[in-house]
Image (cartoon, rainbow, N blue to C red; front, side, top):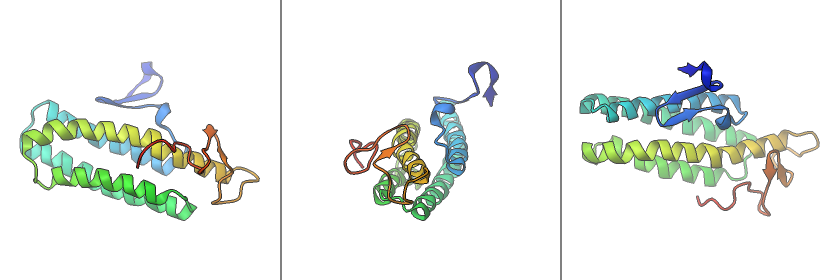
Length: 173
């Protein structure tokens, strides 16, 4: 739901979709919007103390979307020739392993409620604002006039790249 008084901000519980999260890669931005909505639905099920079946159902929808989104995002990166694709896949795999452990029932419901409701929103916001933003900046740099496709130009719009070409090189993968 869009709140017209808050400058086109969409509130998804603790997650808030705003222009600050827009990467400028339309397909990925739209998926992030949908993903945040699914995480919000899971958070509501947890915070409202919904039955375990409902909580697991909302989690299953978020997990299915997570898998689909990761595959789509990785395909976009691969097609663009993104040089840090392996790092990005590694970050996705870490998140996927954790989410899958909860979704598979390997963890008790109460622990899942506490841990995952904290992990999903925090990881999602951090990932969008770091790794995904790094890709968007790289992509825009390769599409800039005079930039060779797939090679990067040493500088990305919105901020300089480090010596290894990474915009956020200090973020561990």
